[in-house]
Image (tube, rainbow, N blue to C red):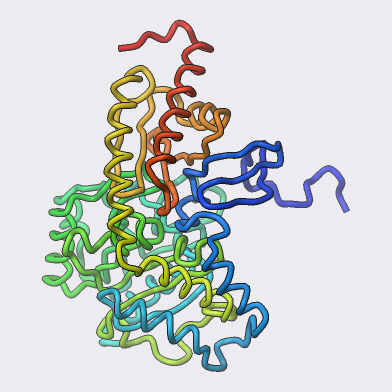
Length: 401
């Protein structure tokens, strides 16, 4: 055994502080400090930490059964699937353990759809530059970002990237082998870049005209993050396939691939599977999350807090023009495009007791829990202002304006 190599494989550039416990929007660090969590495990803990209803439901299930495998019916899986179907465009759901697995299922489903209808040559999926769809070999290829692909051999075939928002390039990419189009309604990792509604409508029109399936990756945008259960609801554009994960289990690993009956017609017994997918513990978490999110008034409160936070961020940008270029995003998936390196800003706000996340295009992401209130917004803005002052003091040559 090598003593020079760490026991935990060093694939993460980890922060210097870990966490021992959490409650609501706060985490308590191994350094003894309390942090306001506006990262939420990268949009995962949408209901905050140690939510009483989730603790109760998952705790109760732990005393019953954890795992049986999908050889047998799982009643809680059927319950969660029926609730997701009732709340969305979908007719059917497959459960896995992560967002990448949800996307893998969706990719297979899109390809299988055409093979099922006698066109196995139609397997290519159009994706967009700046996208992030996961870390598996296939989802890395779908995202197409070279920094993630480097060193893992040839990129998996079957994905055609086009520039973000480029209508001409999109139309030119559609050919006889095209099977579908995959897009995030808002690019999270790519810099909190919302896709214009008109462009989403164009995607639907092109898919209908060319016999393609429209696949929305709502792993980050879904489960209330934009102020509705799923982001597609704002546009009125309905996909054929949708991947969900992150906040679906509020931190318990669970992913789901939702689809219409038409799109999923080829997904028959034996075409896909998962040993752990949809296990009773994960399903108890998912059902508990929906109990809270589907309660009357929940999303209205998210919208109120989101509107307030956006206003406060606009003021923050105007007060600190040397630090920020703009605020962007939708709902509680927001970003500040920085004029200083975003990692410098992330470290500075963490020093003030606020947790945020990075994103492409030099953006600092703000992903508050959906249970956040005005008092938490005020606390976050105060900490970001203080971080700006600290950065300015350590670089006195930086001019405001």
